[in-house]
Amino acid sequence: MTKLAVIKCIPQKKLECSNEILKNFEKHRWVYLAPPQDQTKISISSTLPAGEGIIISSGGSIGGPNLCFQSIKNLTNSAVTTGKWLENNALKPEECIILNSLPLHHVSGFMPWWRHHTWGAQHHWIPHSMMHDPIQLEKFSSNLIHQYRRPLITSLVPTQLFSLIDNNHGLKWLQSLAIIWIGGASLPIDLANKARAKSLNLAPCYGATETAAMVTCLSPKDFLNGSNSVGFPLEDVQIEIKKKNLLQIKTNRIAIGKWKKNKLEPIINPTGWWETGDLAQHITLNNKKALQILGRRDSAINSGGEIIFPEDIEMKLIKIISKNQIPIADIFILGVSNQKWGQVLVALVKFDYRDINKCQIVSLLTDLIKDWHSSRKPLEWYDCPKLSRNTNKKWEVNKWQDWVKLNTPIN
View 1 (cartoon, rainbow, N blue to C red):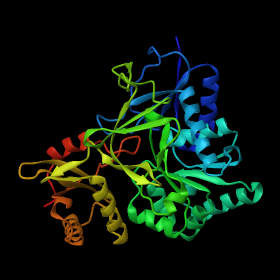
View 2 (view 1 turned 30 degrees about the horizontal axis):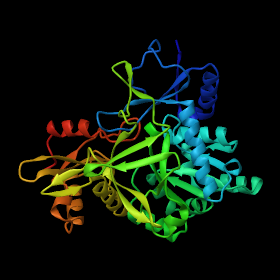
View 3 (view 1 turned 90 degrees about the vertical axis):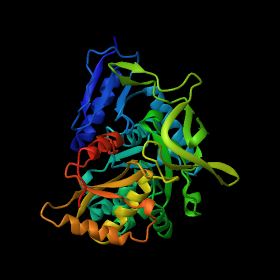
């Protein structure tokens, strides 16, 4: 029986944890990459498939996170294909230096580390503290460039880009990178435009835990020329968009299954396609079909006949909150049922301080968005001190819809 190893991915011990992963792979074990505050239940005595690989939590907000089984073969297939994408963009994978600031228990943090093993490239873990210290970040990278004269590449999420681009040292660091893969969430148009104005080599991409990271990617050239897509499928990927914009993917690196009720269940249909939780459309770019993500299907709402993606509203509100220095630590926009409109938006707010006039802050926000279309404004605002994402930094829609039913909005 294949044995299971559990490695708790402590952010301060990424190097030690990654070395332990390799040791367990050599012993032909499945390695469960447990988040620092692990709440999942998987028994070390469970019957596991033959071989070795990782068990890693997906971000799926539909029904909460799933545990995906990704074999070493799948992980390597993904790394090889990503390397070919680099070659098509005039970079030799083995000569790149990978800077990795993302969590090891996320596929977005695991795969850069696995790519360096596959390619024979350099890899450096970037601590969380350094990402919040742009002076040190720029200094660290400048030393690498001076010492090795090799291209630096990294993967970021939009919030990281947002926090660095307006800082002089952060901007210099971003401009020093040959490739910045950006994914994990939609890239706001205004942030994309700012990145273009600063000539950043962004490569917006789309992928999932279930696909061992990216399956489509936009070249920096196409990004800088104005495309707001997530590019074209990589060479081992097929894309289909079904009725109602449902996105399906076929590739040789789909997870072999997800863990449910103490057993492994397949995630592909009989013809080999995996139905994602996202809605998408094709747009024409360079006379080819590029992919554009519209939003998550479980969060999209129909309000009075208009389809609205709460993520877009959320990003616009975050921008307003930041610009006006409003004391709000986090905000989540979701749809709830409404007799008149079918569905409407509500806002869950985690305030920075307890001793503030919350009604006054909500009044300020509603005034700042008074020119928005009524269907795009939150109908109600909720004080939610315990507002948080799951271990994969994703919102669990069903959980917070249930919470709204039990609570009263701010008057």
